[in-house]
Structure formats: C-alpha cells, structure tokens
Length: 263
Image (cartoon, rainbow, N blue to C red; front, side, top):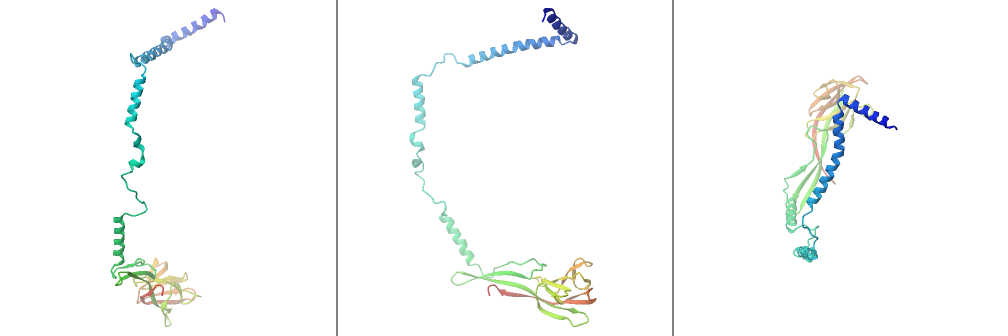
C-alpha cells in the first residue's frame, strides 16, 4: 500500500474522531493500554521483593533437628496404643440389659399380672352403630399370683314381629343378621343388626317399599327411606308396591347374649 494512501486513511480517521469529539477519549485509551501493563509489572516485582525478608538464610541442619525432636516429644509413641487408652474401661455386652433396667421391667410385669379382677378391657363399637357383637376380656388373679384371662363374645339379639297388618304378625325371637322379612323370595325388609346399647334395630328397605309411617327413623331422609331404625316396643308401617299390601315391623326386645370364646 502506498504511503500517501496510509496517511490519507489515518487522516480521515483523526478528522472523523475530532469532528465527533471522540479524539481525547481515544488518546486516553491508547495511553491506558500502554501504561497499565507497565505499572502492573512494576507493582508485582516490588511486592515480591518486599515479602522476602532481609537477611533470610536457609534453615540449617541444627534447626531441622530441633524441629523434629519437638514434634516427636509432643506425640509420644504410646499415645496411639489402644490397649493403654482402654485399659481403665471394662467390656460390656450391648445386647444385655443393665441390672437396674432388668429389675424395673420384671417389677412392671409382676404388677400387671396381679391386676384386680374388676378391671376389664372392652372393645365395642360406639353407640348407634349397627354392629351386634364385641369381644370382652376380663382378668382374675389366683392364689399363686398368676392371672387367668377369660374372653367372651357379646352379641345383641333382636326379638322382632313382622307381617301384613291385616293378619297376625309373625314373631322372630332370635332374628339373625341379614335375615329377609317376610321371606328370601320377596324381601320387604332386611335385618342388618341392632346396637349394643339395646336402643335400635336397623333394617334395610326394599326399593319397592315406600310410604313409611310409625315410630321408626328413616335415613337419609323421611322421603328417601333406605335405612329404617326402630326402637324396642315401637312399630313402623310401609307399603310394598309389588303386592300393594301394608306391612308392619315391631321390635319387641333387644337383649345381650354373652358367649365364652373357645367353648
């Protein structure tokens, strides 16, 4: 490239920067690009020289020996000997209970074995449920100090009368759970069970049964009577759409029957 073309190129650049007011900025950038590396190199050399202590000499062999002796004397050879460190401890079996804990456990078991006969644990459903049986566990102590436990099954048995209102009602003294009334072929009611508080006998109504009247309680609502609860000495009437007859159910009594388990 010719010299006059190079001069004209740089002249145009300088003229353009001067007309836009950027020429001082460019000059400062060029000076900084040249001067900053020089300053950094001088600063690093001066800091390294200042860190080196004056008059420092290499450690002598005597200093090294003294340092080694100091370390050895600080950590004696017997420090890591496990037999010497654990000599004052006695071995223990992690699977054996301490003497005091074993005695407390034995005393607690002895107290539970001589519990009075009046205490009983009854597992029964809450009042209002349709479960008709519950286990009962009672305990009694003998003269030798051992306890004898007896378990019984308590069931609620309903005495129910059912039939056409124009005819004498048929009585069922021991009505079983899920028994169909009046018969299996055309059930109007299905006996589901009675509560252990002896207050309700629960029946499931047929879809063809409607117009329930009397002393019974319907669920979920009186207009939609899917379940019928009747108390002892109360009655409820319903119309069966299959034969057009009106049927009546009467709960005569609900009693509890206790039966020993295993007998």
